Length: 152
Image (cartoon, rainbow, N blue to C red; front, side, top):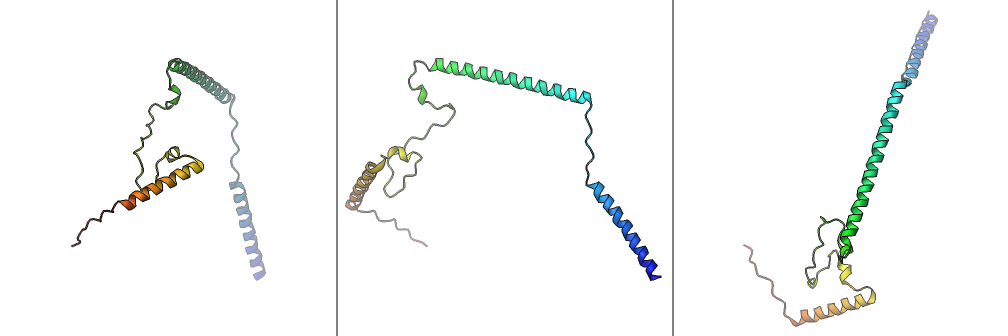
């Protein structure tokens, strides 16, 4: 009796295993794509053709406008010196003017510090000379005492 029961259990398990295999195998497959009809294909091709024509027309208008703008700028720029030095973007902010010499003992962190310095050894000599002059002026003058604040 136990032999028949074990064969029955084994048979049921094999049937369940087969059913699960079938479900897993078919669940992973996507549905085949539907073939578009001839009307859909023609409509898609016509829409694509129309879009390409619109894009080419807009590109053509844009290039004509750019050429016209360049010609107008060339005509306006003739006879006016300094036109090349102006910024391309008229609404761009102008660079700030230098505030003057940097105080002694501080770092020069301006955006255009490299324009005010001479390159190479000449620049280093100028900086050393300036530092010596600042040191002489600092030693000759008496330092101001710090303000005395009482903490209560």
